[in-house]
Structure formats: C-alpha cells, structure tokens
Image 1: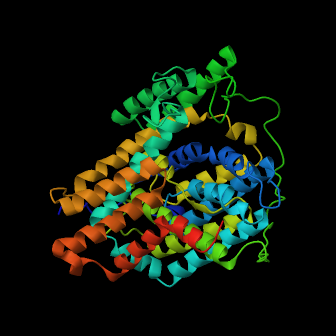
Image 2: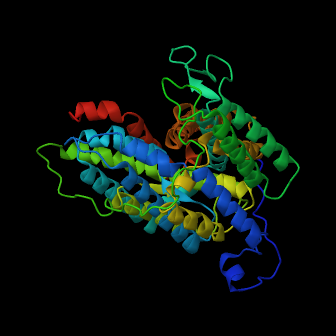
Image 3: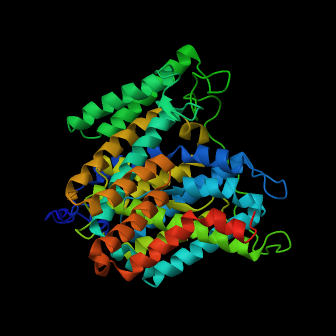
Length: 485
C-alpha cells in the first residue's frame, strides 16, 4: 500500500504573535496568502446566504407557517460568520462554516411536514448536542481512527468529484433532462445554449490557465474576472433571472447592483426554537428517527469533508489525522447547535473551503477573513449576491480537479479495495450526498473484507458504523414499520 506524504512544515521563525498563534510561517504560508484564500472561500460560499433562504423559506411547516426569506438570509450570514471565526480561532484550520445543504433540505422537505419550524430547529440543536457529546468523549475520534486509510483517501477524492459536480450543475453545464434515460445531459437540449453557462466555461478556462501557470491569486483573479464579465454582459443584454419563460437567465443571482448596498439585518429568527413537542401530533419514534438521520448526516458529512480538506491543505498525516482534530470535531457539533438556535439549520464545515485552500490558505487566519465577510454580508446583501453562481461554479470545478489527484496514494490492484473505493467516490456525486458515499464505502468494505477472509482486520467500531449505515439507508422502511409519516 502506498502511503500519503507527511504534512509539510516550514522551518521559518514566526514574525510576530499573530504568526505564532496561527502557525502561518510554520505552515509555509503568508498573511497575504491567507487573506486571498479567505476571500476566495467566502466568494465560493457566499451563495449559501441566498440559497439557504430559498430552501428553508419555501416550505410550510405542519402548522402552515413559513420562515421569512430576509430573516433566514440574515441568520445564515450571522451563523456562518460566527462559526467560521470560532473554528479558525480554536482549531487554526482554514475550514469555512455555513448551513449544510443536505441537512437544510432534509429539514425543509421532510422534518417540517411533521413538526413546526421552531420544533424542527430544536431537533437540529439536539442533533448538535449529540455530536458534541460523541466528540467530547472521544468516540467520534475513535470512529474516525477506525476508518481504513484507503477509504479516507477515497472520501477526499469523492468530495472532489462532488464539488466539481455541484459546479457543473450550478453553472447549467449539466442539467436534468426530465426523462428516465438519460436523467442528466449537457446544457439545454444537449448543447451549451445560455450566456451564463458560456461565461462559466470562459471563467473555468481562464482560471485553469492561471492555476496551471502557478499565478499567485489565480483562483481569485479568475473569479473577479468572471464576475466583471458577468456584470458587463448583464448590463448590455439584461438576461435577468432564469425562469420557465427565461431559460437563458442567471441561476440564483443576477450580477447587478441596484439601489443602496446597505441594509440592517432582520435577526428575528434568532432564538425561535421550541422544545415542547406535541406528542399528540408527532410520535416519539418519529422524533427519534429524525434525530438519528440528522446525526448520521451531520456526523459523516463533516468527518468526510474535514478529512478531504485537511488532505488538500497537506495538513493531515498518513493516518488522516490533522492538527487539533478533537477540537475540530467538537466545534463542528457546536455549529449544529448554533445553526438550530438561529433557525438557519445546522452549520457545518463547507466543502467549498477547498477553493481557499487551493488558493494557498493553510491556517485559521483565513477564517477570520471569511467569517468577517459573512458578518459584513448581513449588511451588504446586494454586494453578496453580485457574484453569479455560474462564475463561482468554475472555482468548484478547479478545486474538484485538485482533490482528484489524491487517488494516486491508493493501491487499487486488489479488488477488495477497489470496489469500496469506487463506490465511495461515485456514490457521493451521483446521490448528491457525502454521507451516502461514505456509507456505501463503509458497508461494502466491511462485507467484502469479511467474506474475503480478512474479518479480523476490521475494527469492531467499523462493524458498528456499517450496521448504523444499513439502518440509515433503510430508514424509510423502518419508519413505515413504526408508522412514522
């Protein structure tokens, strides 16, 4: 088996207390690089301030109530800013935080069909408390250590493909066809037919050339260039937002800035949680299954993401461990508590942080920049939305390609390794879920290794996790068995 190289460390002496605290010189970085990386991470994550309100405010709860769009947007930016800065200060790692896309969709489309919005956010907080307990007791780290090296690398590669796939979808380069075969296709009607998608391609090529030529700030320069082009194009052709009647418009954000860029944030949803569940309307079994699903999604999405980002930043050792890992796992659980408390859904480490890492970010100082920009975004919503999703998507594809390179550290000559790795890598983007990919890898690894005469090499914890994932995958029939809606 080929092992990954140990993290690189510079012998440079720290220049000041700030440098010493964040280990900037020690990790071979500079303050300027960290600032650029933090800005790039924010630019690639900023869409969540718009997308999260679209998801959460678009669903009515069991009582028929909905969340206010602007209030969710403000809460999303506030939570992302607080958690990103907190994580950077405690762990000194360049991983940005924001509302997790898989979890917010589960809450909006499944949970609130059984409980009210305040009750749903209370369940998100309970999920966070469970995660913190598992991390603080060391059980989460024990499970992390039980994961084979090959699967840890596969998780990194899978996340890279997932990031790239998100970029392709967000740009309109890959779209749903509306038919069973093929379910997805190229652009509109099998061709690139919209100006925003063309600008995605242009930005991708320009950024790719800059990165290939090792231009400092290549990702950021590419994003700024693409955004400027998008603003010019919108000013000339007035493409507007995409809709049924305007298929050639922009996906989530139209690159224009009209009116005042300033506005006071609506923080009315902060603290809007309710732990007094009405068990005459929702069963205890339903509550348990909701929390179980939240914990499993939160637990393994974050674990996989942090593993992949640490590898990409060259901060993980041959076992996949990275600096202050226990603190990182605890703070990630706190993100769920804070996200539920602000009604913005669970806040977790974001895979888009790979864009900032690709730009050179190696320390938590980059998080101060990213978090500060999110806090500023509460007051500057028009500026936050000026970067089109199609432009930010180009950076995601570039980062996905970078993370793909980690596959070289796995020896794939044995099929009992190849198949679990293949499933981990492919299931993530194809099901749009990091947790699903990890689960497929874990279950297949345990079964194949066990029936190949290698059962003794499998950690007992891995057996337990694999069984848990079987329950996770079968939760639909299990809920039906107990009469859960």
